[in-house]
Length: 223
Image (cartoon, rainbow, N blue to C red; front, side):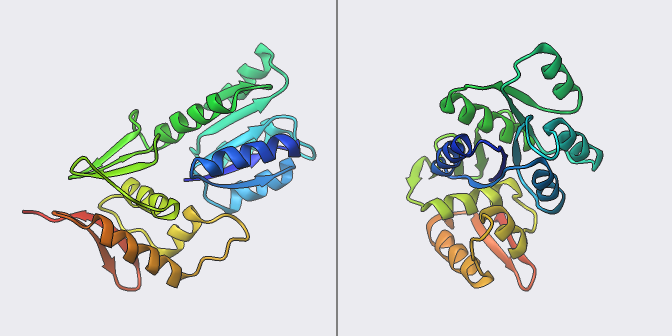
């Protein structure tokens, strides 16, 4: 899961970055509305945490432009202006949730989990694929109810493949979903992560198929 934080208070932004990265998300941050608009127009994210009081371009305008491009990306608004008018305006423009500052990081993480589930079209934090189960809240995977020891990068990779189970995922899409700005991850590194993940989860009918030159697909092999 990849999240964009649009927040100009760097102390708050740093706290959000630490909290969400510690929860296993890939997180990028911008400090102005123009940077947020440019990032959302040119990169794919699973969620944006959007401060309304951004310099250069107001957060509501960033939201308006995002929805005008046809994006259904979940948006969690943060603002110090906890007024009914601000809430109504943000929700009417297409925000999915709203938190007033100051707030609890624990509550924010819970809302992030709920919004990313909603973005995937599911109300549950548990994804099942044959004998494979992934708990998005605990960031834990199981095969036949036995926990599988996975690194943070392997967990993130598995999550992306599960979200698109049965569909092709290219290497470029994996890099975009797993990596933050400035993080150098080559296609060869993706192959290494796929190889390690295969060794741990390819049991019974589960397999990660390679479509040469195109990408990977998480499949269930028919009995």
